[in-house]
Amino acid sequence: MPKPNLIETTYHDWLNEDIRISGSDYADFNGQISKSYVHYDNFLLLPATLLSHPLLSPACKRCSKDEQERFWIRVSKAFGVSHIAINAPIPSMARASCPNILRSPSKLVAVHGVFEDLSLLGVPNVDRNDKGGTPALIAFDKVFWTSCKQNLITQIWAPSRTMFSQGNVIEKRRLLDLLKEDEETATIIPSLSSAVDLYAGIGYFAFCYAKAGFRTVLCWELNEWSVEGMRRGSIPNRFSFSTGPDSAELPDRLDRPIGELLSFHEDNNFAIERIRALAGKVMPIRHVNCGLLPSSQDSWNTALQVLDHKLEGWIHVHDNVDIRIGSDSSAKYAEQERCIAEKGLLILGKLRTLEATYLGRSVMLGRTFKVKSFGPRVVHVVFDFKVDGQIVS
Image 1 (cartoon, rainbow, N blue to C red):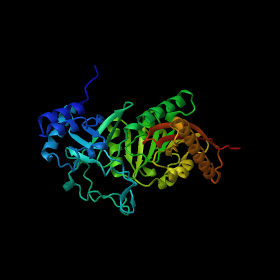
Image 2 (tube, rainbow, N blue to C red):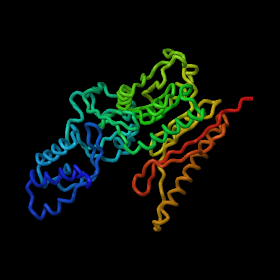
Image 3 (cartoon, one colour):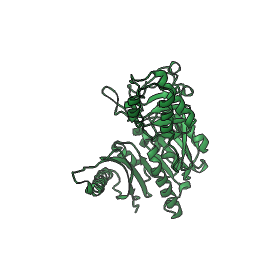
Image 4 (cartoon, rainbow, N blue to C red):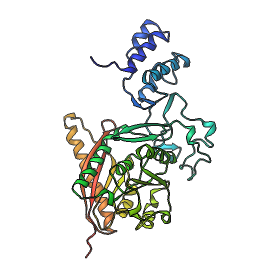
C-alpha cells in the first residue's frame, strides 16, 4: 500500500476541521493541492503553484490569515520543520535596470517561521548590485539557515538569501565519479592537484573537489551570504576553510592540508591575478568549474588562463540549451540532442578562439551531461572540455 502524501492528508484534515466552506466549494477545493515538496532538515519548500491556490495564496479572500496559519502549523508538525516557504523562479533583475548577478531568491514567499530579523540586519536587502556596496552590518546569526546532505556532503545555506538547487545532486555525483576515475587511472592525482570554482556559491561543486582529496580548491563568489554558507558547510565536512588569504600568508603547497578551501569574496575577474600571485603556493590547477546559468561565457578566458600550462586539464562549462521543438513531438528527443550538440560545438569554437590568442593548446569537447530541464524547451547541460598541456621543446 503506498504511503499517504503528507501534504495531501494535512490539507484534507485542514479542510474538514479548521475552515468553514460550503459543500459545493469543498468539492471544488478538495483536489486542488500540489503533492510535491522538498524537505530539507528543518525547512520545507513548496512549489510555486501554491501562490495561485484559491485558499492558500497570500492574496486569498476565501479564508482568513488565521485559518491559513493553522494549515501551515499543521504542515510544520507533520514534517517536523520550523520553517516553510513557497518557491519562485530566481528573478533575472534585482531592481529596475539592475541585473540579479547574485542570483538572490528575492521572490521566495515565507509562510511559516521567521526567516530574517530585519530589525537586526543593519541595512537589509543591500547587496553588491548597488554600486559594489555590502551591508553595513551583516547579522548572519539573525537569519534562518538550513542544510541537507547529498553524496555524503553537507551543505548549508540561508533560503532567504541564497539559492539552492536540489537537481544539481546528479552532477555532483557525476563529478565525484569522474575525479575518482582520474585518480584510479593516475590521469590526475588529487593530492598533487588544485581545482578552481569560478562561481562557488555555497560550495555546490567546490566541496566535491575537496571531498575527492584535491590539495586546494580556490573559490570565487560575490554573494557574502553564499561565502558564509560555504564557511558553515566546511565545518561538518571537516574541510579547512579560509577567506581571501594574502599569498604571502600561505605556506608552501606541500605543507597545506588536503581538501583546503580558499574562498575569495570578489569578482572572478581577479582570479588570474590572484592565482599568479600564488605560484609555488598551490598545486597545479587541473580542473576549473564554470557553473553560472544561463551562461558562464564571461569566465571562459579566465578558465583557460588559470589551468596549468604544462599539464592537461578540464574546464566544466554549465549552460542552458534552448530546444527548438516543432509540431512533431516524436522528434523531440532527436531535436534535443541536436541542439545540445550544436551548443557544445559553439562553445568549443569560442574556447579555441580564446586559446589561439593565448598559448595555442589543443581544446577538445569530451563528455556532455544533461543535468535537468526547465520546462520542455530549456535543458541545463554541463560540457566537459579537455585542454592539453603545452608542448615544451
